[in-house]
Each structure stands twice: as structure tokens, then as C-alpha cells.
Length: 334
Image (tube, rainbow, N blue to C red):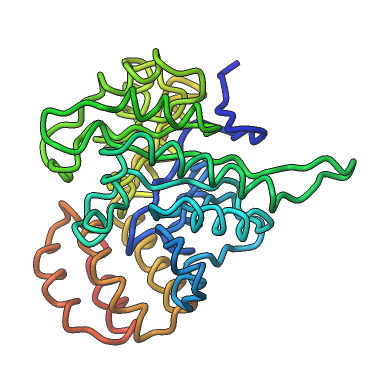
């Protein structure tokens, strides 16, 4: 019997999660990955201040599909505002509240948010503790009347500066503050996404804390996810860029985890069919004008390595209607 991943009171069907990706993990991408086996997906990161001050775009990011198994990832640095956000979201249909302590983007870091929290473990502790308290205050109850607070988790990097490793210290602060799990990305902030991820850091954190540890970084296929678990002992794997244009990565990982053999890789026609489905569903959700523009970036991921893909990528950048884009993609099929 395979060991499932349990985060607080939530037991997931498998240990493979879709990471929050700004500009990518909207409702449609989350649904496609969940249908392929992702046991928990995350929204794009949500500003705690945006929630506090009623920003309309922030509220839009919180929309979930009926029955969706998803978590909200929150960013901020002020404990009282993070506590408000956690209390506000504690009664929603999301499964987990995750604090972003890993975003490397300058506009986030310059405000002391995201991976900048790794510079200050005391503040990191205060932020997680505030979210835990907020989630408890806003908790709903089970049928017996017992409070059911949302688990609070955090996603970290190994450090801020190149060569720095504060992951164990940060993870211990998160655990001490009441965090239910920690996700570790084996790169520093200064690396952004360059160079290989250091999986040994994930193993170090796993040995140092008692809460579940979820590994992240350089998962490009299902076999990578299994290898990460074998090499680090981590309890789960969060897949980020490896899922772009490749929701099947979750089916591959789950098949290997359950039976030791992977699921068949999709052929070119199947990849095109999934891309077309993705286009239609995004346009249905967001309208054709926004949907087509947002899907341009996905075309490159889905068609990578296909004959004629370079020319297609150039052409879609000037297309403004869904049916023209879809007709062009249909021509790629054998």
C-alpha cells in the first residue's frame, strides 16, 4: 500500500501537486492537471493586501470550480494582514492556505515579500503563526460541531543569496509556528530558475522536521517525481514548469507510484487535441479576447519538438480569434 500525503486533516489521493504559477494556474489549467491525476492544485498567488483592501482582480484569482481540490497561495509580509487573509479565506472551499516564501520576482522581493522572508526567520515565524491563528478564527465546523481550520503551509527556497542554505532554519520556523507542511524548492532566490535544483536540500529538511516535506524543482517527467521521492525521502512532489503544456506528467507520476510502470506518453495529435481543448475552455471562462492572448504562451509548451512548431508559434502571436488559432493547430495533426 503506497503512503498517501496527509496535510493536517486532509489526506490526498497521491503525493503529486500542481504548483502555483503566476499567469498560468488558472481554473482551466488546474482542471486539466487534476483530471490527469494532480491530487492538489494551487491558484496563482494572491495578495494578502489585495484581499484586505478589496481588490477586484485579487478576488477573481480566488474563484474555484465546483468540487475543486485546490489551495490558495498567499503572499505578504505583515502578520496582521496575513491573519486577516487567512481568516477571510478559512470558510471558502479551498483545501489549504499556503504562504509564499519563494517568489523571486523583483517587485515582490523589494516589498520584503516572497523569498525575501527567508532573510528574516523571526518574521517568517510570525507570518505563519498569524495565518494559523487567522485560519482557526475563521474555521468552519464538521457535522459534530468541531472546528475544522484550514491547514497552513509554506513554500520556501533554499536561501536568498547564491551559495546560501537556510532551508532547515526556515522549515523549523514554519513547523514551530504551526505550519502543517513545507514545500522546498532547491534553488536560491538569486538563481531564479537557472542551474540544477539541489535536491539534497530537500533531504536535509526532511530529516530536520516532523511535518510533511514536499519537494520542488527540476521535475520534467513522471520518473523525475519518483526519483526525487526516492533520493530525498520527501513526502510529496510539487510540479511547476514541467506541467506547462504537459498535464499528462501527473498521470505518468501516478502510474509509476501506483504500479511501477508509467502511462503511455501522448502522441502529437493528442497533444494538439488537449491544446485545442485548453483554448476553448479558457475562452469560455475569460472571453475570447483575453483567452486567445493568454493561450499564445501555451502553444509553445504544447507543441515543443513538433514539426513546424517554430512557425506556428510565430503565427499565433498575431492571431486574435480562437477559431483561426484552432484551425492553424488542426493543420499540424497527422
